Length: 254
Ligand SMILES: Nc1ncnc2c1ncn2[C@@H]1O[C@H](COP(=O)(O)OP(=O)(O)OP(=O)(O)O)[C@@H](O)[C@H]1O
Image (tube, rainbow, N blue to C red):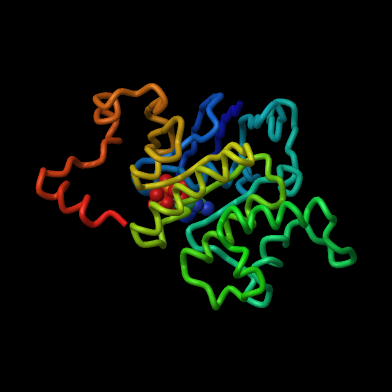
């Protein structure tokens, strides 16, 4: 269960933005979509503890991370979120394996056996085992994003925050990584908040979609239950192909 009440006002020179997000859900993956500048990324930052809130409440899986009424504000590291951005930031001097293990290691001790096993499972789940000793600059964009996903999942996060995780990838890779992320996320049972502009991301991964605009949730769509007509009304239907394009698309399917 996730409960968010995120209220704050941001000022930068003459610019002002008001975030007023309220939602409560028992779904595993919530997708945030909507126009640019609607407050989607700011909401993820607030959940991670990186954006101070003036007022509100954040409860994740029964644990209260923030409650202004009780003056409770759990520090960033204690929230244990796995945060993934569009531009994966891997450590260039570390191997793939060391990158994935990064959040689990301490400089003064070796990786514990259970942690090492988790890292190996993640490498295997994302098809990275053969690349474990490679440095990030020897990897393709898709492989790097897999390493970033594996790293985000390695430290046993209580919540995954995914901000446009596939935006830098080409469409074919996006489709592939969506499927992999869906499988691995379910395998590890981690809930997630996913920000995306891509309807296909929502349809493939999200249980519920939240339309953001002007710092607020304007609409909630339950994708587990929504009919095709309801999806279309919420702007979530992929544009229909004409028969000829559909035929060509099938021919091109990898
Ligand atoms: N520190 C800040 N001070 C004032 N305004 C800010 C600050 N940070 C972000 N904003 C503004 O808040 C608004 C919401 O930003 P946010 O990054 O959450 O949008 P978004 O919905 O994620 O957009 P996009 O889809 O383009 O990534 C934007 O108009 C942004 O310019």
